[in-house]
Length: 345
Image (cartoon, rainbow, N blue to C red; front, top):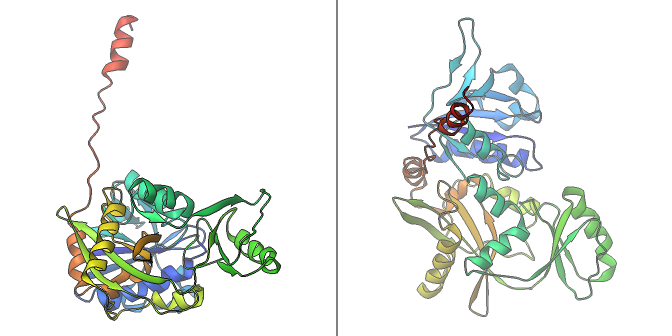
């Protein structure tokens, strides 16, 4: 199977996407890869797999490579004798943040009938906005921490501390601050609103247990990763999370009870449901007083969370063979023809 990795795009997480894409060379060693880069102007470029490095993008060197057009059933390169279709079987959407996780590319791939691994449009809507994620989780029977939602035009009043302030639509802890008193509020709001017009404010709970679990639905059953207990910090800021995006070695499994593993898997299954079919996601959970709470859904996790799987490559290839199909909608013009017939036209 040949996989086209699509990455980059117009996003605050553009550089993270590049790091994730390059990491795939280390973990998909037995799979043919095609790299399609989206620059800040949303132009597509075909990047040679054997020469891809981060410098290719930071230096602007990528502009010397073929520019591509997206059309029905794939990507095409212009040539002297017409357009040449780029050969691949399926796209891996590895575009973090805007364009990739907000549904823009999902809609584009769907519109042009390009098979892809990644969240569909509805899944993107559910997971990209942290406030909407909480409403979705609640409806699925999964607990979340309570929060206050604010738009930048609202009068924001925070009385109890500490709290954590997050932009609604960003990942990788970009724009996130822990606020311990009123003196820190104004700066934290400035930081968050630099990246998004909407924020949530949650109670910050110190020393909470955190666990990550990834998975994908294959042949009607969810294939789970191991459970990871991430490195313990006050919280994982951007710099620490950035390192996750080039991880290629399997991490150690959390030393927790079988009962807790079962609870985490049950909550993951409720979140995945049918909404996330076609994608490999990672859910980050809190455990407080033996109760499981969803923190966030990562619909396109850093480096595809390869480091949580015993056999990531075969899991991804199996997922590629189990993608949801678009429903066929016959267009017959029967209704229009009846109107025309009734009018004698």
